[in-house]
Length: 443
Image (tube, rainbow, N blue to C red):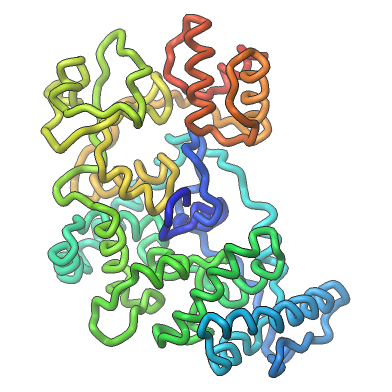
């Protein structure tokens, strides 16, 4: 993610992201985000009889079709060099032999990496899935079934159990979709491929250290195609830094059917990055008539009382309780819901930087606790801009004199500022919302 992240905001996995949505961190993306529910990874296992076997210095390719054979040979050569680098970082030969036994080049992983789906969902489409009735109902059941464990985790780390359960729900549908790809095979394939080789080699070294520490065994180390693992989808480097052994059995086990260590690790991670006990992630608010939308910025923080003096109040018409300084967030511009967001919003953001993910976790936790649905309506007639359209928007804004400081198809702070400047010049509501309607006007 844009900071040290537990997960991967990679588009094709469920979260972390930790979806492979923090492997390739994206800046604020409005109104589109990757899909909310984690999907069960497609598993294409080759029978053990045709898998290449590890040589003392690498992998011997199996007699597969020509392309696959060449790829396996290339991976074998890459592993020869990698083993030397791994040993220099303290990985023992026996760890390498066990980890790479039977590993082969996985073309499905490369296909997924090359064809990650675009962020094509609007915030309301994302939330329809992330905070569906089924996910709420299953979350309440998970809370009930694991209450004793979750109460103990909350007492230890100060992170509310509903929040931990909500992360679990978005990352793996409460453990149902943890991913079944061989993590060593996936990471070796991606590191060898080279597109993001440095990152994936770092993850592969971390995975080998996990194995060497005895937390799990090579073939039990399964996860998403991009290496996110377990109930709450930790990438290997984040596991090394933040995972905990809450059961006290000497292993940090996030892979087994028992979710205890995974849930505790998630709470420990959030606590490490500053979770404030008792503070909400955010609160839905009502904006006054004539609200200055330029005030809806992460850079502008005020106390709830100060916001109330400017007409920004809760949905009950009262000032929001004093949970600390807060900003105003408009994930769908002036036509959708508005939220007063607090420090804990930024803490959840460490898991996944997409606003929609943070709102999804926060709102799901509220609903699991018994809170109401979001009251404001969304501009459901709108659709998300495609990647090509986002680039076109940036190009047209820049040509019109409102520089986005680059054309990359990502709607971050610079593009939002350019949109607001253009809106100001046209006498429009300055909410910074990159909509299809705005693009059509620029055309």
